[in-house]
Structures are given as C-alpha cells and as structure tokens.
Amino acid sequence: MVAVEVTEEFLRRHRDWVHRYGELAMIRGLEDARFHVDFLAGALESGNGAAFGDYAQWTARVLGSRGIEAHFLIENLEQVRDALRAHLSAEQAAHVARVVDTACEAVRAQTEVRDADADVAIDRSLYLQAIVAGQRKSALRVVLELLDSGRSVADVYCDVLQPAQYEVGRLWEQNRISVAREHAATAITQFVVAQLYSRLERRSASRGPAIVTGVEGELHQLGANMMADVLEAEGWDVRFLGTQMPHRDIMRAIEEHDAGLIGISATMLFSLPRVARLIEDIRRKHGDAKRIVVGGGAFRVRPGIWKEIGADGFGADLREGVAAVETLFPSPN
Ligand code: B12
Image 1 (tube, protein in one colour):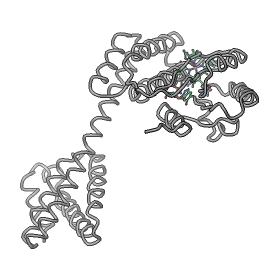
Image 2 (cartoon, rainbow, N blue to C red):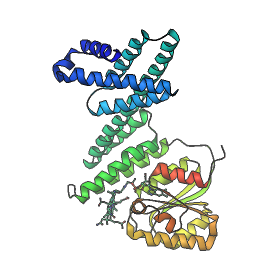
Image 3 (cartoon, rainbow, N blue to C red):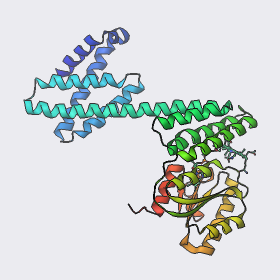
Image 4 (cartoon, helix red, strand yellow):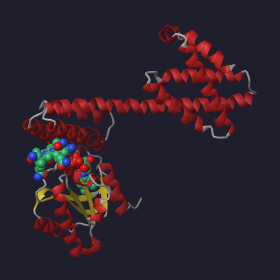
C-alpha cells in the first residue's frame, strides 16, 4: 500500500522518469519503495535504527553508480516517512521520522565526502597534467588551492603528489613519455614538496632525534623526503640524509645525532640487501635501543619482508608510516 502510494506520487512529480524508463519506472520504483519499507521495519523491529542509515547509504551508492543522484533517494525516503504517518500512532510516527531523517543525513554526509574525493581526483589529474607538461607554476597553484580548500599537506602528499608520481612512472614504463619529461616532472614535484614544507601543520610535542635515509645505490628520494618532513611536523628532530648514502656515513650520522628513530627508504628491490645489512649493523651496535621503520616500493612487493629483515615497523605510505612510528613511540596524550 505505502509502496504503491509513494511510487505513484514520485512518478507524478518526475514525469520524465516515465518517458525515460517506460513501464520499468513503476516496476523498479515499487521494488525500491518496498525495500525501503521492509528495511525500515526490520531496523525498527530489531531496535537498531542506525542499521537503516547503513542501508540508505548502501542504496545511495548502488543508485549513484547507476547514475541516480542521492537527492532522489532522500526524497523517496521522506515520502515513505510521510506516508507511514497515517498508519501509525503519533509516538510511533515520531520515532520513524527520527530514524528516517537520521538516515537521510547519513546519505547527505556520504555524498559530501564523495564530492570532496571527486574534487581531489580532478586536482590529481590537473597536477599530473601540469607536471608532465613541465608547468611548475600550474602544478604549485593546483596544490595551493587544495590547501586553501582545507586539505592538509600530508593529504596532498599522499592523495595527489604520490599517485601523480606513480602515474609518471607508468607513462615512462609504457614509453609514452621520455626520460626528460619524467625527470622534469619529478623535479617539479621535488620543488612543490620544498614549497609545502613551511605549510606543514606542526605539533608542539618534542619527540626526540630521528634520521631518515636511503641506502647506497638507491636514487629514489621523494618518498623519503616527504616522510622526513611529516615526521618533523609530528615533533621529531629529523635529520634527512637524502638517498645514495654510504653505509658508514649512515652509521656515523646515527651516533652523531643520537637518533632514537631511524627511517629507511628503499624503492628498488636490489636495495633490500643493503637495508638488511644496515639494520643488522645498527642492531649489533645499539641492540634494541634504536627503533627502525622502513618504507618505499621495495617493501610493498612482499608483505612481511620488513619483519624478516629485522625492522620494527613499516609504512606503505606516509599515513601508515606515521601510524607505525606512533605504535613504537606512543605519544603521551
Ligand atoms: C622519479 C623516479 C625516478 C627518479 C628518482 C629521482 C628522485 N629524486 O627521487 C630517477 C630518475 C633517479 C629514477 C631512477 C630509476 N628508476 Co625510477 N622511478 C621514479 C618514479 C617515476 C617516481 C618515484 C616517486 O617519486 N614516487 C613518489 C613517492 C612519494 O612515492 P614512494 O617513493 O613510494 O614513497 C611513499 C611510500 O612508499 C612511503 N615511503 C617511502 N619511503 C619511506 C620511508 C619510510 C621510513 C616510511 C615509513 C615510508 C616511506 O611514503 C611515501 C609517501 O607516501 C617511480 C614510479 C613509482 N611507481 O614509484 C619510478 C620507478 C620506481 N623507477 C623505476 C626504475 C626501473 C628506475 C631505474 C632502474 C631506471 C633506469 N633504467 O635507470 C632507475 C634506478 C635508480 C636507482 N638506482 O635507484 C621503476 C621500478 C620498477 C621496479 N619494479 O623495480 C619505477 C616503478 C617506474 C616504472 N613504473 O617502471 N627513478
């Protein structure tokens, strides 16, 4: 009854749906409305009103992937809410209204988050175009606009710069861009990282001395650089050694700086034996007094390899890296 009433009214309001979908508009509309009512009843009977919010968000995603915008679902759910009023006591109707309105809010919130993600995806592609075209100013502008819209520097590193660099790698691998374009693109990202350094949100905590480095033979530096900057923002007194660092000099720097945390970055698989040797040497000299976190493409190839070579933690990206450090050195608050 309620489903029929709701669907007929919905199609009266949106006549173009009947033109577009023919009799399927009524059939699918009825199916959907029955689902809404059944799920609502199930959620209310089980005393779990929040479950209806999960259902509404799921439905919004399913409809969204078929080109139907979330506001149509919200309208439909509000119709169900209003149509049920005639069949319920005032108290029951008020409860149903609360559950349905909360679910509609959940759908709106989910849609806003997805819109924000879509914005980042657009900016990521603009950034990629700019760096591949060698346009430094445009690349910086894209990133600064993202910061102005409320994204953090770490978000920009993870969600824009890193994927854009990976895409540059893919384009080079497929021979669609030259080495010169790849180098120029990477140089722009390196420039952007340097520009963003002063915009990192810094925590006031003082976490102690740390070192971030790459081993000899490893030339990929950007990921390590980002990690060093983000750790500094987290309160670590970071000495970033760059990449291509001779073993003995890393060992010396650890002592000189009295680093309690050591971050080692490796992209190429062939760097792993050197990383393993470095960790072995650090353990031999300092036992467990030093905490070692590793990251970079070489460690993503086989999950768990970081443990096998004796590291204390691993981060597939900046966020995971920071989380791994936080596990090893829980902050006091
Ligand atoms: C730029 C680049 C270079 C530059 C690097 C310059 C520089 N200043 O860094 C140069 C030209 C030197 C270079 C050289 C080579 N490269 Co190169 N390079 C790249 C490229 C396109 C981008 C790298 C990058 O900037 N990534 C962006 C950063 C942000 O990502 P990331 O390093 O993964 O870092 C993140 C995480 O891993 C993590 N992380 C990183 N370090 C750490 C450390 C810690 C402690 C923690 C917790 C986390 C962490 O956090 C970071 C941020 O989220 C990649 C493509 C790719 N998919 O990575 C190819 C790529 C890595 N290179 C590749 C190759 C083949 C090479 C060369 C062998 C090419 C050649 N024939 O000479 C050489 C090898 C050089 C060497 N000895 O190391 C291949 C590797 C393939 C493979 N399976 O091994 C790739 C994947 C390209 C491809 N698609 O084929 N390269």
